[in-house]
Length: 143
Image (tube, rainbow, N blue to C red; front, side, top):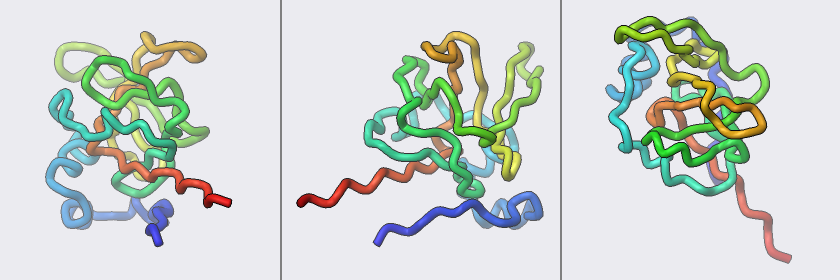
């Protein structure tokens, strides 16, 4: 049986030491230190199955595979998040102004959103794959 990934009931209460012990070094760098994984390195770039993309920090459902698209950027991209799953802040690091996307449940940094995506939203949620975990939809039983 596949394990379920329910959102962590107390993610915001974790200490920095607890985050470091829960996450891999690359997950910690991205989710807690606002890092960015190297372009084209995420196996999620090639993920085509139906399912749900969750926060790797707390398990919060963030994106449906129905909204994933190939952006050609080298990071998993989506045209919309699930309702009330993410928040945004202004990021003025690296001598530019961008809109940062974070998990609403734990505050983990996920990536950035840009206004050059496809219809129906015109948005491109460019996410760090290491900040996500993918849960494939179970195939329907054959009759």
